Length: 184
Image 1: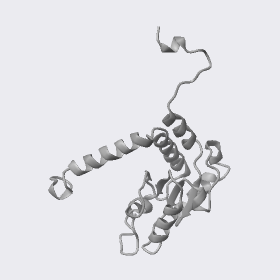
Image 2: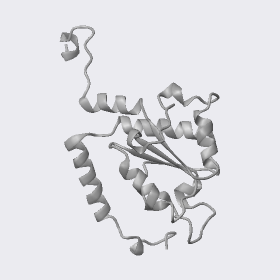
Image 3: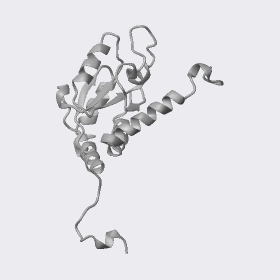
Image 4: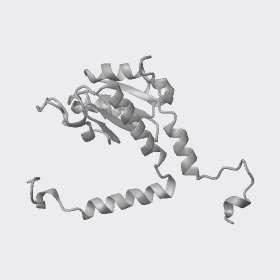
């Protein structure tokens, strides 16, 4: 005879983190930041054939102050990087970033001085979506994976503990210069 047997029917038990995570993952409002050919695939994601509205993501926001997810679709030039950072800073928290396409993730085939070699040099990225260009189905899959990440994200003191733990692990890691094998 556990505690579940003593609770009347119709009562739901959960945590505040669970409720907040459920509400946040069910209502992404993406900010459009389409810079190249990947933006066409991102637009297709919102079109009737794939209908992102089924998951509460149909409202692409032109204003960063109304968005909580930035989809960086395409290559980011050095001149565009400060604009990208400014838009990211204007977004209210909590906010997430999805790097769509190989150009946004790592610079792609443009290995030159004019292109940022990965948008993670400018803003923190929560989800990487590979491909050149990635299909809308891949974006749907990445959105569902991001939803899982948001659903299980800790809040308050639990989040601070997790961040401190990650920082300690990063400081204790072997520096890249000292690693042996394929990395060298």
